Every structure is written in C-alpha cells, then in structure tokens.
Image (cartoon, rainbow, N blue to C red; front, side):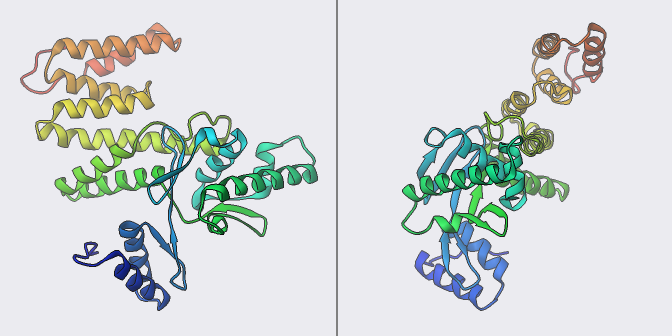
Length: 307
C-alpha cells in the first residue's frame, strides 16, 4: 500500500486519517499510516492516542513522542516484571488470576488479589507521573478480570515483523527489499528479551521465539551480504546471533564457512572456539568431537584452502 504522502502536513494527515477511521473507510490502512507516519493509534471514533514506545530488547525503556519517560531503574522489580509478563503474551493481555498465581503462588486468592490491586495501583501512579495528565487509562487497562497494555509499540514485535518481512521478500527474490528489512531488524536487536526476568514460562517462550528469529535473520541475510561483497558485515551478523545463542552449532557452521572464505586460520579458530564453549558447558569429549567434525566436514567455498 502507498505510504508516502508528499507535501501533507502532520496536522492534515491526522485529520484525514482520523476521519477515515471514524467513517469506516479503509480503517486498517488508515491506522497503519497513522502509526507509521504520526506515531498515533486511532480509536474507532477517530480519537488519536500517541503511541507508547516500549524497548525491551537488551534493557527496558518507555518512551512517549521520542522522549524517555521511564527506565528500568525507575520501576520497582515487581512493576518491571509485571510489564515484561504482559509484553510476552499476545495482545499484551493476561487474566488477573494468572498474574496472581505468577507472583503469589502460595497466597490465598483474596490475599493475592489485594496484593495485585496494590501492584497495579502503584504502577498506574508511576506511569501517571510521567505521562500527560489523565492519559494513563489509555495505556494500562483493567476490566472484567483482565489486565493489559494498549496503544503500545514494542521493539520485540517490530523485530519479529521485520525478520518475517525480509524472509518473505527473499522468497520472492526481492533482494533489495529483503536487505532493507533485515537491516531494520538488526538495528532493533540490542539484546535478549526482558533481561533479568527469570523463571516464567511465557517470558522464556518469547525469548526463545526471538532468538530463533535472530538465527533465521543470520542464515537468510548472510548469503545476500556475501553476494554483495560484504563479508565482514555477514560475520558481524552471525557473531551477534551467537552472543544470544552461544551453543548453536548451525551458527558456528555458518561462521566457519564465512571465515573460511578469507582465511583457513580464522576458520580453524571458529572450531577451537566452539569446542572451548562446549567444554565449558561440560559436554562429553565424544559429543564435542562429533559436533566439530560435522562442521568441519562442510568444506569452505570454492577457491578456499581447507580449514
């Protein structure tokens, strides 16, 4: 869909897009334009709500109109954990009973409910201190036994969408568009999802999904980079993926092949490094030897010396 509206002022764009949503005219398209061009979410009646930007990869920040409102250290551990828990699930929404069980598994339901009331109330006050007056209810919602976040743009979801977009372009052999999408995705990756939050299945599952997407990015993009004579960038991308998943033998195999294109010595160093990582994790020697042999059997590209 067309997304570049030359010579439109933001005010005019906002008025037209809000009118379109209110009149049920191409509402999905109008909302996507408002989010992309104006950082706004449009309600059914055309009311415009500024999006909260939440950055949860490699840290935790909440921004409003490009201004940092809150960082991790300004939230209590429980407040941050609650936000991360909500951000790890579809639609950022959970039943309050699930949240109570997560935080207070051994407390009676009434006690857990009272503790949750206090936690949500304090989080609401924390957000209200930094948001424009009377707007916190747009973003932190509680109704009919559910608690959720609304009108948020989250870097983790943007990362997943960019990786998926790049892979779709690549399958269509649209290499330029694929490279643009992969570049956008890589710029969003600053580290694992919700660092410091442990012991929750939903958070771990979200972390795993993002980690797999980062590996998919590396495998899909590196071939394009090499064909564009950007071998150092390809190595950098794989190294970034390995920092997140340091035991991934397929990534080590990719790095081995990439380094082998310029130096047999560098390729051998990849094998030594992988073996050292496995030993540090107490892998048995026979399993280490098998993994290393599997990688080494994948010979470097044509014209390279053996590694």
